[in-house]
Image 1 (spheres, rainbow, N blue to C red):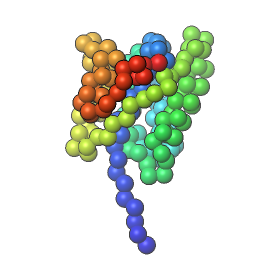
Image 2 (image 1 turned 30 degrees about the horizontal axis):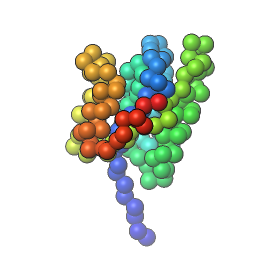
Image 3 (image 1 turned 60 degrees about the vertical axis):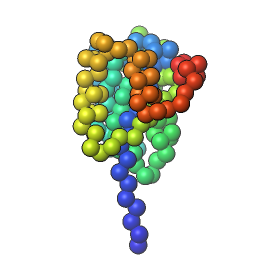
Image 4 (image 1 turned 180 degrees about the horizontal axis):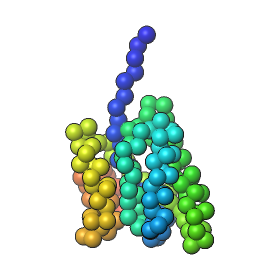
Length: 150
């Protein structure tokens, strides 16, 4: 019988609705952990999850058994529902509709992992919108600015 072998490292980025600064201590670590668990339950081995006050980065291996859009739909729906239970201040928490995903060369996985772990350092110099534009340019993604933000 033939064997299907897959090794797709994926870097996923998305923000809170209107980039509201909801992802703060002490809830940030719970959110990242919850997102990692959702990825793992969908057979997408999480490598790391991190972010900053208004967005998240996920580095995982995409399973051959789930479509990327389905994984992201699950992550957003379940994590949004979960974080709202942590505090009344988070009752208006929502994710943006869109997202960015980028394939990662296996030789670059550790570099991307460290980038995600060090999000707070990066955002002393660059806000989320400029960071996201940088990724779009780096990966040569054609986009229309008016449809990127919500």
